[in-house]
Image (cartoon, rainbow, N blue to C red; front, side, top):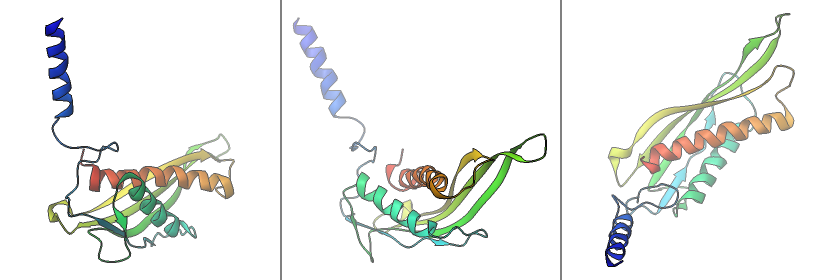
Length: 169
């Protein structure tokens, strides 16, 4: 019985003292001097322009970082800075019917991101992130269908940006 208590105590000690300090989002502890972040407006430079997605994307990225970190959002001079542009908004047919109509379409959005970390320049990067949403060829990509597509795509892209810049898995 005594051995069981010692073994349990050792297991608990090793569990608590792991390889690093992580929070519940999987983010490894950031530099203690990092207090603020800034997300500059992501301009839509895609050939096919869907009005309003630039603002929606910018706000989604701000919201995700605020909800998954204890950093404060600032308009200028942030310790972490995200900037870039939406470079592609493309609808492509994926499958066709016998009468040469699209049975399924795919919306793909690509965002180019420049990340700057004032406290750790080795973390800086410029990278493109993209994701897609498939929908029926019978549907028009408007209203609730467009909202569903943007929600799906932006959720994935913003999480990928967060993981690349802060989670460091």
